[in-house]
Amino acid sequence: MTPSFITESSNDAVHTITLSRPELHNAFNEIVIEELAHTLVEAGKRDDVRVVILAAESKSFGAGAALHGNGLTMEMTECLNSQPN
Image (cartoon, rainbow, N blue to C red; front, side, top):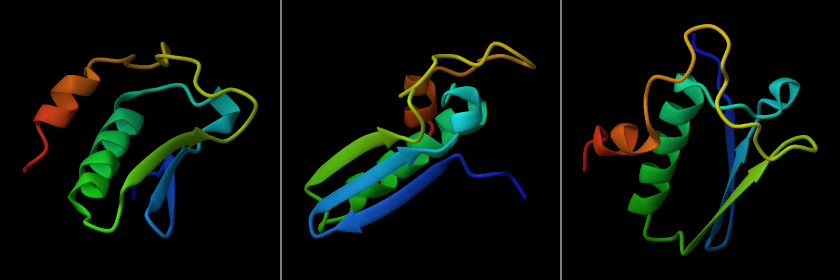
């Protein structure tokens, strides 16, 4: 099973999406981008959600691209465009 680096919660019309990769200062890799894009698209489809808050665990919001391993090969816009409507 693929680990999840995103957590979600809702309170009335406010939906909070939290980056949950604190050990790497929430650095983005392909998995994080795909999860975030999917989560944003799904939140956008919900009639009960009026506001989306993007938050992060740890003292760092995000360190940018994770440059170890395969690095970052997919742009956020490509990932969003690949989601079904």
